[in-house]
Length: 337
Image (tube, rainbow, N blue to C red; front, side, top):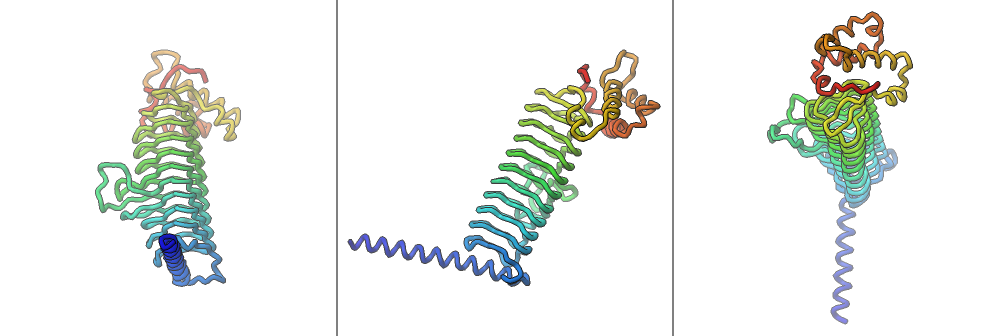
């Protein structure tokens, strides 16, 4: 009986200690709100008592922070942000308004530099955003940066790393859907309105333009460029640039023609698609051996009296010349378009 009473006394003491600890955390969060010039009447925020909010953190209006979260001293949360249980914001990190961190998400790291996330972004369960890169050239103490735009959905277990040097930054634009378990490495530049299916892996310094679409389990080699309105088939290994408007696939990705379905979905007219088909054949499917090098074919297309007047074709020519068409020779195959 004495042992049972002792057990009950110990259990009561532990509950009392836990309550005091939660009460202390809640008091800290309340003081933080007051120090930022907000009161319960003007800032109807919810901060769970088990959450640790550093007094120097800046919280916007109407934030909601669930249990067991951590907000670091240099963090800035915009208005109406929602942090689900066990999510954390570390380092010099800024979240815009209406951002949502799902359970287990981590944003930022205690490193020189900063992570800036725009408005209306969703960061999924156990995603890791804005941490140190996996590049041996990174020197401890160097500043590193990540900038993310607005209206992105970054799904579960995705990792996005900061830049490897202070003269560069990792950048993601607006309205991207980045599905589960994707990886965007240091110094990547991702545009807007892209869709990355599960397990899309981008190595360092990759450039993805706008409206690109990847299928699942694809790998893009470092320093490659993925053109706008292109499609990469599932399971592909991309080791060269992907031209605009095209579709590639394969264990070593090869051109499979124009991304016709993607072009139609994005509102390209019948005339534009017909012109792109003609341009594609001229560049990638020469009819004889006297058509010259691929640079010669691009120059010929640039001087074409009809095709050169189509903006989509001009864009294809410009990008091809700017990148020295290093992608096109390897990718060229006689596929029907």
